Length: 155
Image (cartoon, rainbow, N blue to C red; front, top):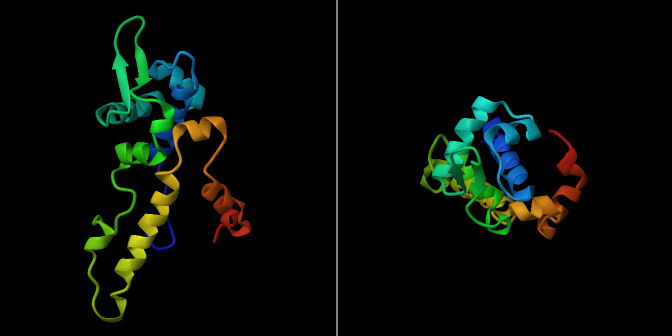
């Protein structure tokens, strides 16, 4: 986790698919429609949509008029919900929850650092909804973070 928070293609595609679906009227689409609209490989999207369905974010209807739809309003679905559905916990250290890490000697405070990293991810992802993204009205604290000049600089 040091120096890198990696947003996988799986998480990125999942968020994009849910945002695309939520922006439609009526809010229903097939896998192929979502894949084409967001330029996502169809077979990969199929497994992602299955994850989102199992997590209760999407519902699927088969048949000629079938497709995927959201199970709740976009304002009630956070980006964190989608990432967790496809990737699991927002932050882990060597596959463990940050609070379960134990370090000897002078490295002991690292546990608190990893917990703070997870908290900072939550602060953005749990407070940004699909509706916020669609409306391009991100939470003020997210806007302030992205306004910082160093936010746009790769290190």
